[in-house]
Structures are given as C-alpha cells and as structure tokens.
Length: 360
Image (cartoon, rainbow, N blue to C red):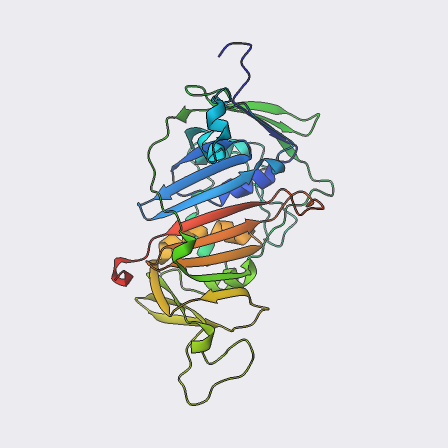
C-alpha cells in the first residue's frame, strides 16, 4: 500500500466492551468469521454445520470514529445503483476467537464486573495451554440458571480499554491498537486475514413468514434456562389467537380444547418439558400467526444463541412456511439515542434450519 493511499477501514472507540460483547454473541467454536465493511457499519457472519448462521450488524454509530475508503468509490454507476450500499463493500475472513482474545488482552474486554453475575466478567489474556474464551461453550451457557443481563456501564472508576482498528486491504492483516486508558499500556495486534469463502445463504423472506413474535429477552432467556441441557430437540408450537382459548380480548370459548398460542417443548432421553406463553402484551409485545405450526430444531443449535440472548434487551422470533427460524436480538446501546430515534443500536440475527422430520 502506498503512503498516499489511506486504509480501507479506520475505526476507533474509547471503550471496546460493547464491540467485544457483540462479537462474543456469535462466537461459535473455532470458526472464521466473514467481515463485510460497508459505509454504514460492519457485518460479521459465521456459520456451522450448514444449518445455522449468525450475523452481527454493527453500525458505524457505536464507534467514535468510522471511516470507510471504498475500493469502488470511483465507480459512479455502482454508487448510484439501488443496490449500491450492498454492492460497495469489502470482505475478508478472520479468526473470531483470535479477534476476541486480542480485544481482551488486558482483561477488560469482557462484560462489566458491576453486574450480578457473581465472580466478575473480566478475563485475562490466557496462557499457553489454557482454554479459549469460547471453551466453556454453549452447553455451559445453558446450565447458567438465573443469569441476568450485565449492562455496559461507562460510569464509576472502572478502567476503560480503547481500540483503534485499521484494515489496509487484501493481503494485509487486521491491525488493532489496544490502549488501557490514556496513560496506560498499549499493544498492537496484527491478525491474519483470508479471502472469504462462500457461505450458507439462509435469507428470511418476510412474504413467507407465518409466525412473528416480539418479546423481552428476559422472558425467553428464563424459559430456555429452565430446560435440561441434555435434551435433543426444541419444538416451537403456535396457533392463531382465534384458534386458542385465550384471545387478546380476554373472552374464553367454552367446550373447545385449549390450544397454546405459543408453546416451547423440549424433548430428550429423560422426558419432555413444555412451557406455554399467555397471550398477554406484558409477555408477548407483538404476536402474529397466520396458521398452526410446529417445527423442531436441534437444541445444540438453539443453545448457540444464548450468549447473544443474555446480553440483549428484546427478541424477535420469526418462522417461515418451511420452518426456517430467525432469532433477532437487539443489543443495548452504549450511547444515547438521538431526537429522531437514531442511535448506536446493534443487533444479532440467527437463522436455523428445522429438523428434516418437520419439513413436508
């Protein structure tokens, strides 16, 4: 890269914990993430077993500085096209485990220790032979009964770790300058990048959607935390309000069998657990169901969403007519929202295919 040519990406923030929390929410076991750089922010995507994908949408607002010098910025036709924002991008692959470990090199890249999680969320840089930040896996997350969201706090006397990130283009590493406070130690990490490989494309078509639910993440998290981690599959059962015995107007029909508006059923070698949700706006903020459905998914795949779920504020659950499951988690913002509603909001989107036995 010549001296006159600026880096393709320059991004910095004074407190990297929010960025690290989002990445940790999609950190599957030892996978490379595909990073897509756009003018409006970053897309970070991972997949596993050709069955589940996770995409983190990290908008530029969460950074104190975000500059994208597109390699295609001289192409006026591209920039003027209706798909210009999506086409004008730069992509590369990077080891997500390595990136998260570098962000946590001073032990301050984890959740804030001011939460109710007990022994504190900060982790130090691991020594040779120790497990990675992802070693506990999703199974341990599922066993964490009663854990609560640990909000990112920027007050008090806690030390904040800042980050300056640059990417010069294909063949160059992703460079991180990590600094602990203005007068603290600094370190530079260079992470190898790779050409992106084709990934599983599980686009969710809203025209084929038959179920959409929006609820507080705490309700969904508490329900999953009650399930036996040894169960094999998780089934979502739902019916339109007019077919249930619990419509929103509060009037119940007599002489008809009760059908759940939403039931989560977990099955395994030791039995079955069922949990029914009431048709109550205090629980289900939004509910749309066009017909009765029942689709099952491997519990190990659903368990991979728990890290993102535990850090989120709201959950959107959608299922299409072929059983494709979309779980969107709205992440808490480290910055105040503007007067027009804009702000540094980020979210994580999981897409998961159903078990073959449920596909007609």
